[in-house]
Structures are given as structure tokens and as C-alpha cells.
Length: 212
Image (cartoon, rainbow, N blue to C red; front, side, top):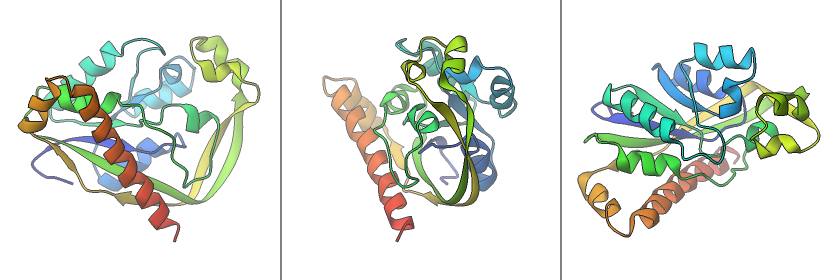
């Protein structure tokens, strides 16, 4: 971990245990952005709040509060964590080494945050032994968050409990002034896409390597 940098942690995601696992491995408190529905469901809301997490804005909104909260934490030199796969891997579980496409909000955050010493730290969580449980029917979650399209599907919300897991830390991506200057021009969207893809490539590579 860069000792002299503010850090934005970016990781894959398949279990509610991911946030406390990462904090334990890093021996640091991390302010993780959690999905909006987690802030609406009783018990789950209390768990994520106790971990210091803060909710994303509701689906289809512009994530104004996510950016404001994240920037405030980074300015206070708190670590911020993001799971850019979104809620889909939590609800519909895939193989442990399979990575979903990334939302690019974290890349835009890194490039917009008015701090001069920020690095993105990619982390891969590879479960090699786990138990999968059925938490509750998806239609039950729809009562608390009808805005989430995933809850229109049938079936159950899965809950993964790790028994053996490996963590791999990638190469930090430093967000320097040159990148910020590029982001201010017409190439901003392209730059955010490239940074997001670079993180995805690192995490996907670490997951593949860990399986060999």
C-alpha cells in the first residue's frame, strides 16, 4: 500500500464478508460504498453501518451523494472502497474467478476528487472454499427497494460464507496532475474507461493466476 498516498480501494465482490475481510487484511479502516438496497433492509442496514459503509444513491440516479461523501472522506485521508461490479454478483452468484463488467463511477471519482496524492489500489478476492446459502426471496428485497431491477427476477438472494480465501493486491494506479488535465478535455470519458479497464484487467489477471 502506498504509505504517502490517499487510497481508493477497488475490488471484486461476492460476499457481505468482503469489506471486513479487506479491512482485516489491510489493517486499516475503509469507508466502503455499499449498494443502495443494503441501506434499506433491516439488519443488513445495521451491519453495513457498523462497518462504516455509506450507501450509493438509488439506481438510475446521478450518484451525487456518492461523489460528495467519497471526496469528503478522501480529503480527510480516510480510505474509500468501491465494488465496481455492483450488486449483481451478490444477488446472482457466479464462479469465484469470474469477473463481471465494471461500472466506471470510481474512475470518474478518482479523476474529479480535488486531492493531489491519490492512488487506486486494485484488489482481487479469490474464494477457494465456501458455503452458499439462500438469504431470502428476491421479491422480499423488492419491498424495501423497488428501484433495483435485479429484484424483478425470481429466485433467492444468495449469501456466500468463505471458508478459505486468498487476497491479491495489484499495482497502484497513481492519479497525477497530467491525468487530471486530460480528464478536463473531451477525452474525459475515454480516460475513465481506460482506468476502469486497467483495474479490471489487473483483478481478472490476479483471479486467473490464483486459480493456477
